[in-house]
Length: 83
Image (cartoon, rainbow, N blue to C red; front, side, top):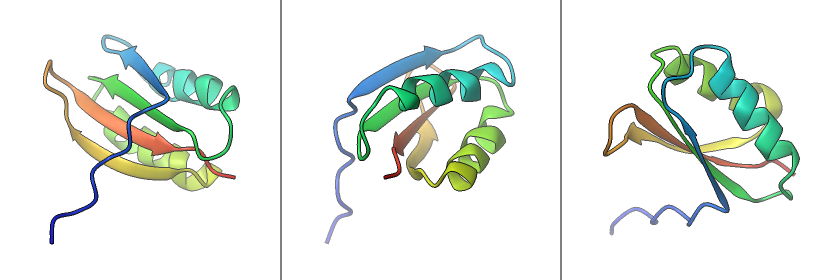
């Protein structure tokens, strides 16, 4: 049995070139405007994003659905908003 496919994001953010803490701040701001259960994808190339975004999700109760290499470089994080 293959794993469930990722849901189509309701919103995508390009945070390439932004350094800590900007990727997390952008994610927080955009998630605040989305309803509970919405899915956000963010692509970031700051090495700290691989630590900061999962920690942000854990602290805020959001589900980190995916953390994988992005096709154009960096990493693509897929987050489901808590609620």
